[in-house]
Image 1 (cartoon, one colour):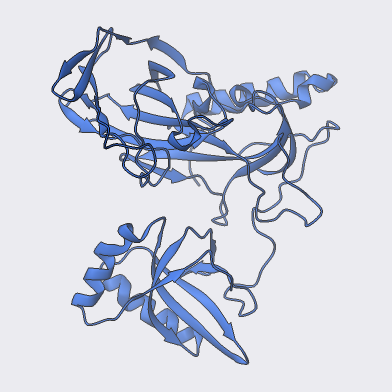
Image 2 (spheres, helix red, strand yellow):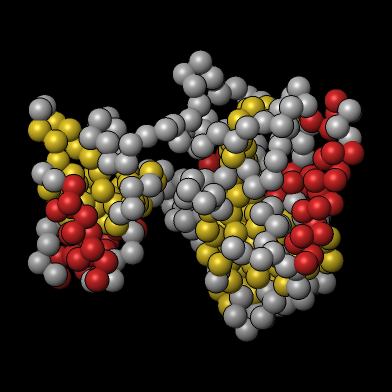
Length: 371
């Protein structure tokens, strides 16, 4: 059993006490992100841009009042377009180069000319720099999405970066949400959870809240003991400042709009592992995995045991993201062994080349296409 740090225990106790103290107040059943965290983030610095300078076709902006040297660059030119050929842009932090992204996988680059907000904060003995921008494909549209690029600057010689998008804008996106003494972040997106009843509809004031923790410069989704994502499906104001819980499987007890403690509901509908009737992507242990866009089909088997044995072989060959997809075609049932769960085909190229070098003939599969 994992023993929480003393500060985490105290934080959890205080949070639960706060929830109980206002049990008779209807407003207590309205949540906000800061109520879910162990303690709020405190902003320590707000870097200020100096006068931009031109160098050829590149605009450089140096920021003052920053703990690390911060230079933002933007390459201008008529040949660049926002969607098909975006302007090269990025930042140098203590002479380390970083691009801008708007997704956890850091696949989709963003062309950023201006920051909506930039600040530094210290949390759980580590230092961070947060840059928030407007999502690139929202220019000229009514769009609530914000792009977060978070940099761990605790060690200025080895800065790391994570990225994510969210309709919420504010430092409350950061905190310790599972009370383990590690920094996490949450994102709000307009999406139904996988377990949503067919009668439940996505509206302009409903959204899915998921949490991620930072692990050696990577964002890792927080999950429960059954390897299911922790989540809240909520209804509130369109910016996510306040909300009521509709469905959840969160790290701490939550109440529904009536004030009753809401029973946790698994993110996925109850299922049978490797069910041939379910066109779901499974990991090698039989847990459901949310599909991205592309995967590589490496082999196909008539029996599950054969597929699992082949998965073990791929594991010995240093492949990490191995999955099984149940494939029912006509009356025949087979199990596809797949490598990767990618957002783009470009992401798959290293694994595809590695598989070809081993004598396999991997084929792309569109995970979002009709089954």
